[in-house]
Each structure stands twice: as C-alpha cells, then as structure tokens.
Image (tube, rainbow, N blue to C red; front, side):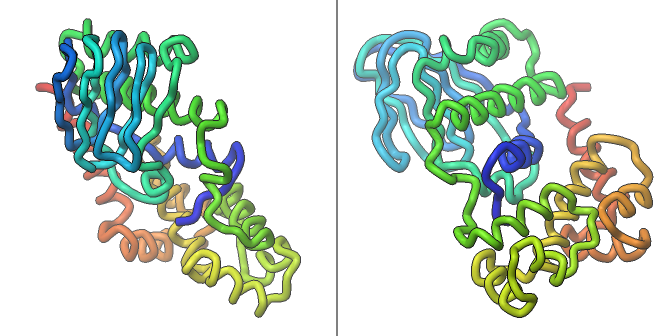
Length: 281
C-alpha cells in the first residue's frame, strides 16, 4: 500500500510496526574479525570502527553509530579496528504497508549522543536484562526501532519523500484523506473532489499511481487499521466495523476474511495467542 508523506505518514508507519525480541549478541571484536548475519537486526557500535558489507552500499560505522536492518538479507560486519558492538536480533510481527515502507538499511551516526534513551534501553536489553524474551523484550525492541526510524526521519537522513510513492499531487491528497479518516464514506466522487479532478479522470489517475482502484485501496487500508484495533483493545467486532465505515458486521467480516483469510474474531485470537506464546511459561 502506498504511504503518505508527512507527520501522519510517519505515524502510520510507526503504528504498523511491531517486533519480537529474537536474541542478543555482544561482540568484542579484534581488528580483522568478521561476523555474519542474516536476520533483521539493530546494532550499535560502542567502541572501534566496523565496516558493513553486503547491503546496498558498504558503510563504515564508528563509535556511537547505529544500524537497523529490517529485512532478512545476508550481511556482515568487519572490524577495521578493535571495538565492541551490541546487537538485538528481531522478528517482525506480520507484514504489510508499514514493513514495505522501510528501507533496506537505516544508518544513524552519533546515535548514542543524539538518542540517549534508545541507547540506554538497548544496552539494558543486551547487557543487563536477565530474561528479555517475552512481552517486555518485544515492546522494548519495538520502541528502540521506532525511535530510530523517527530520528532517521526528523534528522533528514531519510531519502526525500520516502513515505510518498504517489507522485501525482491530486491522488496524494486523496490518499492522505483516506489515511486520516478511513471510516468516512469515501466514494470515488468524494475522493475526486478532494483531488480537484473529474470522477473518470481521477479513477484512472489513481489506479495508474497506486496500482489499485480507490475502493480496493480503501478496503485494504480499513482492514489493516482493523487488525491494529483488534489486537490493541477489546472493542467489540461491531464497534470496530462501524468505526471503519462498515454498515454491518457481516460486510466487515467478509472484507476482513477476503484480505486476511480469517474472520475478525479468529484473527484477534490468533494474534493474541501468538504474542502470548512469546512469554516464557
């Protein structure tokens, strides 16, 4: 799904991301030492200088720098000088537009100085926490990565318009309006008015820009928003349906099942069981 530029677009990405803590490493490296990795990871260099290879570009990280690799691509770090690196291994919860919006790698220089709270949480998770597996570790891992993404964006490290993959201004306005209020009764005519376009011209431009019809785009947006509502609170299914613009719980259930393969109640139960299974018993 296309993302929307600006504060609301960033909030949408951050709200849609959730990570499980999958492991931790503390590397005390000697010059010339290699470490190979192949899963989503967050790393902070506490001392020394390391070279990261295998991603889109070779990068050198000095003391205080941070690297977030959200995907499963294989990469390696090579110690150019002796030092110490902390690593949190991550497992994404679900997939969707938020995950698709992330870059292959996110690099922040001077992270320790610029984002001390996230650094302190990461050090606690790796160096001190006796048992980071479970809900607490998952939430801290998610918070660290969210703070890093927000810092990357606000510091101007992100590529220009990285959240906006719609280059047509009128369509972008319509997309932004849907994200701001997905429960609104958005007809093609109403969206065309937002885009300052004719109905027929808008529909064609929307599909060309997003690869989807306005109706399908809105349905997917509503289902993704519903998934968050269902996990984050105990709202009745009918309340979620009405909040997202569905006139009946049945219509909402059909749309939800078509996109997820589960009814809303099944999805809520499975998602919560999955989170609970991460808690050591």
